[in-house]
Length: 302
Image (cartoon, rainbow, N blue to C red; front, side, top):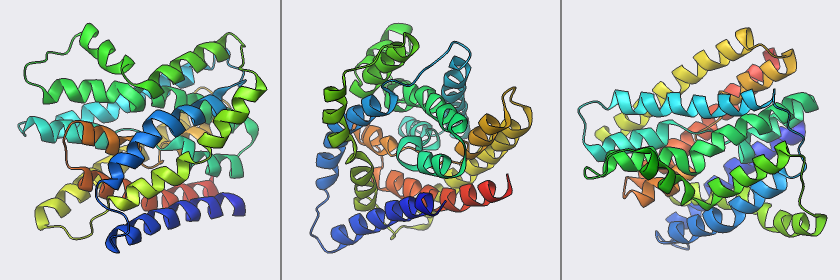
């Protein structure tokens, strides 16, 4: 329990460090692009390979993968619906920043520290479905909304999804896990070295983009996204714990995961669509603080 809490406090400290270094002009605005490139093309693919390699997956467990993807679809649809009548850029922003769960670098330490191995495995499988959307699926949908000339079709959706290297890596590793195949140990040693830097770089990237000076419109936007996300997350946590047809350990894990913070990848995809990256960073950092409180309280009472 203590180790899990210290890990989360470390994440928050790294965010504060990124913010402080930016305020002191040690890190510049363009640092975000450099960090996002390293995360998206190097450390994230490596942590995906390291985390999933050798994890046994059965056909029954694939329902948890589907659940992770469906929760994202629900959040994306909510983001799209709550911005009805707004500009295309605003709709795409809400779709990206309302959805997604930061599980691999944030929620897993909680689950590993509080729940048995069954709950941890369930978390990994939910994260696989979550990642299908976070690493490319949601971006493909948001991109179709941003570009007025581009109509969403299966072809355009798949083209955008498979242009994401993390998504392709996740898909390959899930198929390998289902077929009970694993990469050799020397490969995992290599990927683990790079993957271990992923959490630190993600938190630093968020901190660099925090801007606490905002006008009333920006503040309302921040509160609106946070309120909608956590209201919906609380409902999902209740439904998962009470009604999912799985063991208690799995239902506990799913309830906790429902309260996980938003994905740091939303910042990268917001940048790709030329959206408000500063606001995306504010939403992500505030969600980490709120999720730390909410997940801790939930684990105490479960």
